[in-house]
Image 1 (cartoon, each protein chain N blue to C red):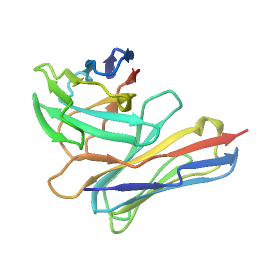
Image 2: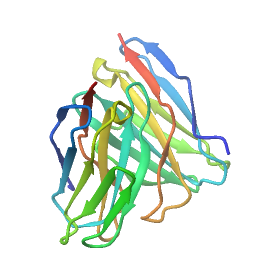
Image 3: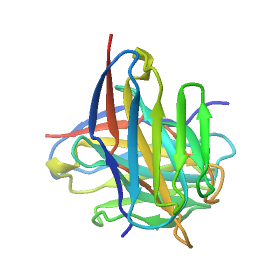
Image 4: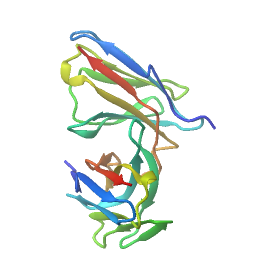
Length: 114
Length: 112
């Protein structure tokens, strides 16, 4: 079974621009979560989607948004980029919303904001 | 909100020495998971603990879940250079919330 894929792998943007990141979960997985990873803050939860609905949201400003499609693929969007948005954005998929489900991470998208 | 603290932040050991990382939650957890992230890689699931006082072993790795389900530890016996990476604990609070909160991680360096 193919793992979680994320595109693009690397991205360079300038302040004020917007960016869209894509995540394709493992086949059969219906839940997708997004995390921001920075050296100083570790792994911070952004949001989680299941059946095209946002189920949980972390403490990030409204510039960060996401969506999930009927095939469980997910996108996240960051508008009006700031320097502090430079980070590794990780997507993780799991089978369902069950609390004991394992999360399988993708390789991440490395975003650099100049 | 729920906070998960992990110590130490960094650990350097000589190959063959033991290593332990500790995880403490501000709230009672329904379960706790451990992940390993190699340098330049992404987190990879290691194990999940669900029961109070649970202990699980994977070869040289021993995982424990505290009796109060608020703390956990990972112990590696006789470290090897392949153990290098950052180890994260991640917990879900008891109750309806299922957001997985990650600890800050312990970065392990193994010196040959």
